Image 1: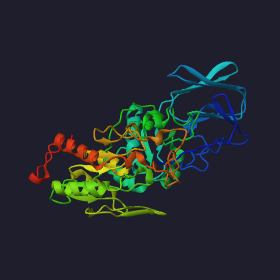
Image 2 (image 1 turned 135 degrees about the horizontal axis):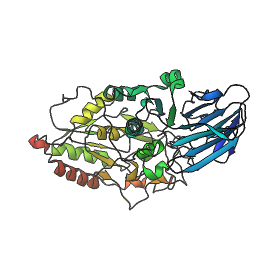
Image 3 (image 1 turned 120 degrees about the vertical axis):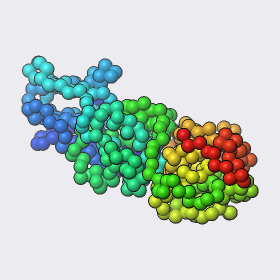
Image 4 (image 1 turned 30 degrees about the vertical axis):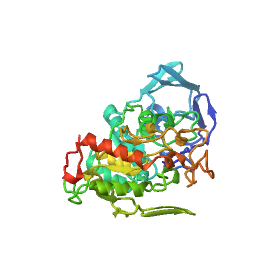
Length: 434
């Protein structure tokens, strides 16, 4: 979950940022020290008489020297966003998320040229920074939805391991790494930047705060498409072959921050013992068997079978696909389980259930402090491993999950097993794969 904080390098006027140009049209630096690559400096689309434009990080228009008058409109909301007279100037819209833009340019008091945003048949890039699995899996279907809606040629930037997971099952989408994107960024008619903007008070990059609409749905709002969630397809290694013959459950106990853990002292140990007594083999597929920060340690639970390690995500998808269900946290492997249509028992307190995919087996308590992830007064700090903004250093630290009892989790598992008619001791494999 990368923290995207962007600062403007040029002055603002109204709803538009303006940068004066003296030689050739070059865009100002936008991204600075963020995970995002810069759009290509030279605007990619050519209009008449030296006019240039594109929609790479907002609407960008260059007016050559001359007596011009430019208007920028949003045709969906019927809004005039900005107008300016003059020449030898580059104009950059404040809003960088999708809007239905119209550019009108007058010369000598008459309409000279206009352009309505139309991506049909054109190349569009969607940038997904960082290597966070859950974010990319949640966002990717909205990029695909954008491509279908606008009939454009879609390129999505992501890290290599996730590219390997998605590219084989999305042949019509060009998945690229950052290095690959840098070589082709001059091709794009439009570029959109999907991220978690913690300090975007003016909603320049996201029309709705992600803490309000959910981690994955924010991509739908940024791209201007239906925000209804949809699980992505993923490539599964040896998809039809079970990794083990016996009924099993997959768990993942690690996370990038202590607030994401299930912090009950005997929670995982009790659940593993319960599952084994029920007749399941219990497989842990975390990347790391142990994560430690100072005196804070989180280890592989006693009694599990250790399949931890840096493995291909397609192999992880295989373990998840054939599991009766998955038990995890608000982390990437829960999203991968969702993608392969395996039921997920998700234990999380620092995020509200709206943050993740719709899930009838979400384990969450409102009887203790919860949902600090969504509190704009205490933005999440990625570099603070012991992040507990309201109760750090007190007996209430991490009570959001510390108070989630093993019996609560077991009751949720029992309900899931009843819904899917799962009975490992009878070796019944009747789980629906809708």
